[in-house]
Length: 140
Image 1 (cartoon, rainbow, N blue to C red):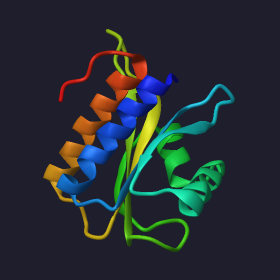
Image 2: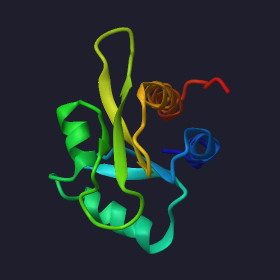
Image 3: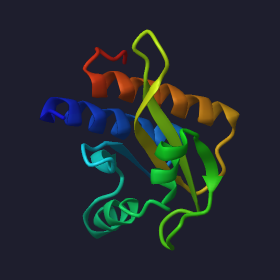
Image 4: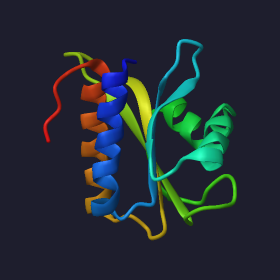
């Protein structure tokens, strides 16, 4: 992924944290080794981000499971202690005129449960992330 796309994803996350009332967000994208790699993060850095990246290497981690099972999850307890009380994971998929193909996961940490409107906003954010990942222009 180019630094321009990484910057675009980072800005997308930074601009979404406050309106969605989430503490942090990260985007993981499909890696050549069948795993996931960190593409962008906002609201989390340093040792906590390093710990998240290491945790996602475990196939049992909810972010990895979201990608493998192709299903999103909301308002779940974290696998490891620390940070806000809840997590939500949204599958990022690409649509190329045919069936969708998973290309990543949007993961957010939040203190309060996300309602249906916030969940829909996360799906819109995931769609914008997908456009950035595959190199299509995104809308503001």
